Amino acid sequence: MSAKRLLLTALVSIALLLAFLPSRVVQGRSAQQAVDHVHTTLPPNTIDGAVHPEMIQDKDAYRLFLQAAALGLHPTTEEKNRQRAILAPAKLNETELASASNILQEFKTEYEAAIQRYNTSAETAIASNATPDIKPFLLERDAIVQSAKQKLEGTISSQSMARFHAYVQGEKSKMKIAMEGAQ
Amino acid sequence: MKTRLLTLAFGALCSLLFASNAAAQGCALILTPHYSQYVNRSLDSSNNIYQTVELDGYADVGSSASCHMSTAVHSPRIYNVTGSQGGWSTGPGGCPSCYVSYSTAVNIIGEPGVDYPYSTDSDMFCTVAGTFWSTGGNGFIHIGVTNFILESWDTNNCYYQMFCPNGNTAASCPAATFVDTDGMNAIPACNTLNYAWVEHLVVDGVCLPVGVTFFGNTPKNCQ
Image (cartoon, rainbow over all chains, first blue to last red; front, top):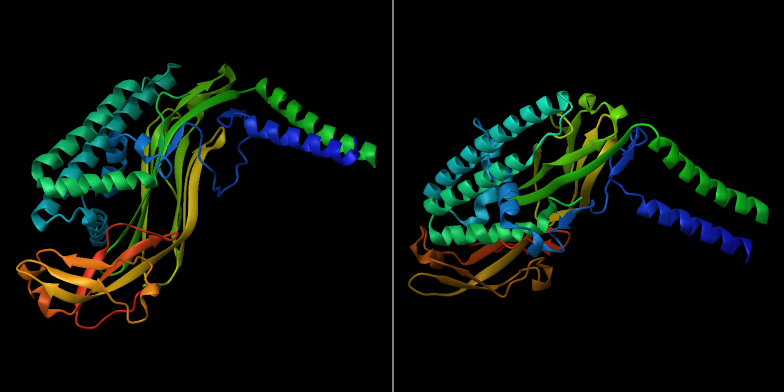
């Protein structure tokens, strides 16, 4: 075997070894010097909506979309304009837009409060060397999303809701969703 | 030469294996990320291009006793740039198992037909492990314009055909026809305006499906 071929074999072996090292296992502080601006390919345990939108569940798509479209309690004019632009494809009339904006704000308030409650309990658990249980929070999170969706369905017209739903379906292509329960 | 090459290759391989083994004897973290990213892009009638990047999720954390995870802090970081606007933002830090929902928005006023670079990154940073989750992308975005000329109308609607003064091949998002549904009930009625044009966001050459519609009596060049 030539020296070049031996070298090539060794380098391929190193590349394969690097490729199969589990990326989510971080040993000690060795990863602390991470590159500051990384454009990676898809992280593990992730559904790429650009490739498999059909694999993204509605509850996940609605959660991300509602959170992106929702405003805080005191939005600026620019934030209101952004919300209008985000919701424009649903072609809501002014009354529907106002109602949807209120529902989104309620959703955001409830969602963030639930996160805060869970995070407080997680910090308490970690401080006492216990493992936080996230499952009850995930159920609550999904229920908050479902509740907001039902409020929208009960408030805006069926045609507007159909457009809203179609738009959220289309937005799945811009989502990368973690597979929960995957290890 | 042959010996030197072999030594170099084996040296690289052995140092890699040794480093992994040595670290395993100290603090070992197993972070199983469950994070999601969503990038929304939208356009308004003033040609504002909005880009919202959202990071949402949590991590399952397993660690050896020597890791002292109670001292670790996890923070979301988002890189959100369109044109010359935006940059890095860091969200509030929390415990390793804490749930994160963080987003940033940036907007620019776009000139139809002009390509603007965009970049989006979402990272999770751990004070013990460094950046342990990251995803993103970059490309170009522009406002596409498709102009239409009024052909006919009925009681409710106006019907248009594509007409680009600069040639129909100039349109990024060509469409043979356009219907202004209920346009006859608008003020002014659609049959008093000879042209309609639709602006779409075009991301990496792909037209977003819903555009912003304008009407007037002067045609627009397609972009």
